[in-house]
Length: 294
Image (cartoon, rainbow, N blue to C red; front, top):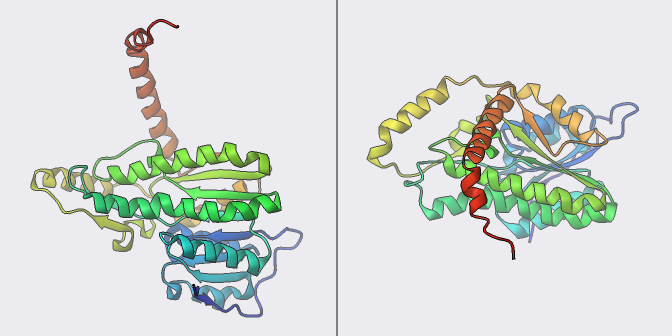
């Protein structure tokens, strides 16, 4: 198949003095964290293969950063296009140091409201798409004997909210896949980190990043109250996040998980405290269910 790309200009910013330039492959680069992180990486002198569903949404990057960026049109739900894009990026730059899965969107609707087709479509982007990227990149990273796979999850990979329960479920799946992946690829010198932002003032709440299930009347008031609460939520500044991302990719031993934002740890600590309390309260029932060893 033919993959659209934007031709690189001849002159781009040089890598920072004394620093080894890293080469990134980033999905969902047109807006939100993807756009912020692409530009931050380029501004520090790294090289980036930036991908988006619409090439026109990122072609200005080449005008600004020249040969340090390769822009590619990529729909992560198309596995053949994913394989072509990853191969083209690797061939263009000669290696890939960091593979960052960032593309995703949220399905808004109560559990009863969303159709199976809507749920499947979200999983195609949020779960199966990242898996396609990982599977396309791993043979190349193994051959290199190095690489760092990053995935944009959420604090909602540990806790849940009503009305976006299916989105939360996609992030729980995302977390499990990457945790298993980290153990599987460590012997090949490949690192894995799950990036878990809290609430930020990105375009994630825009129509391009949301899909709405057909509403059912019994949930109308509940959802109105839910959205009123969201509107009052404190949101972080996306421009403050690149330093944390760079600390992870530059670390000799990066963490498996990294929260972004000040509110994630308290909410997750509360959730796990409550879970442990419940498990412990029901420990006698659980142990009785063990039966007798044979």
